[in-house]
Length: 382
Ligand code: GLC
Image (tube, rainbow, N blue to C red; front, side, top):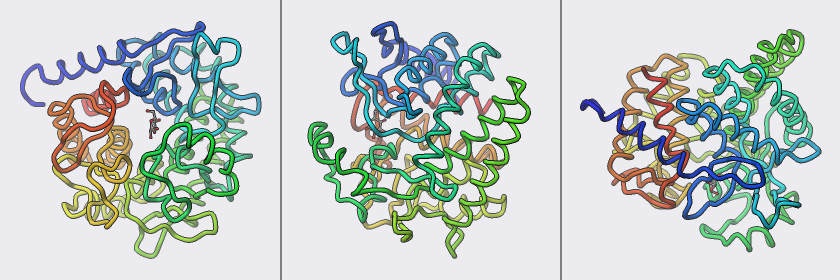
């Protein structure tokens, strides 16, 4: 990425991809993850898209989040997937599960570029309702449970293997008819990653409330964030200092996955703890520092599979999460190396859904939206 023009070329390609993937249906404009496989709107995809779009098209970034919040259910839930088709204009299809809470983060990031308070005040009441829903329906003792692997965003992650047997490849119809109705009884994990996004999101709510002049509300959200961070330490931290998710019965799920680094994104651990985590695990060539990092599962795990969707491959949204954590804790050089390696894999294989962390081969959907997060990583490095 050091050759002249390489950064600009990547930024241009990212911009072209996102603008090509934009659709307007029933008055809503949003970005589909990929024109080949995912032809509607998804929760965390849209947040990542908005975070990139803000660098070159503020209107598009705001429209993305506006469209996402239009599918909010009456009880406050924001579904992980919404289908706006002309046919479904009267009754858009939306799912009954959500995805990691990163909407307030996206809204705040968009605001930090636009300084458009009007947009913030429009979206804030919806975010409050969403947070109230999360607190009521997904919190358990100040940490978050996730009630379906699809809700975790990492559909076939090994974290779910002991909780619910999920076939690696499952048709949408099978998921809808077999898993969705049984979800509340069959599955739930108490998740480090979801809680880390939740803590960050509450911090963003505190900032947004402050920007909008509601000091009391801002204080309440800050106090809540402190409770969530304390609960993360209490519930997830194990003797070796690593944070692990728990089964719904409280058993530790001790696999080494990218979730180990989520506490850094939330600011949940101390600087010495972060240093140990980075040196012993992230930069460990036998675990996460592969040729094209970061594998979603450590290569030392028996279950690691280089092409196995969320069971090993590198995903750019995870690199983005870790990059932000590294920068927040002051690991600038490691963050820069991660950016270089992320750039390298995209240069080699294009904006794919996920990548083989050893060979760098591109896998899954082509022209995949959130892989453009490399642009946000670049902007945050300069
Ligand atoms: C897959 C991913 C999920 C993503 C969706 C759309 O289901 O596992 O995280 O939101 O595709 O890209």
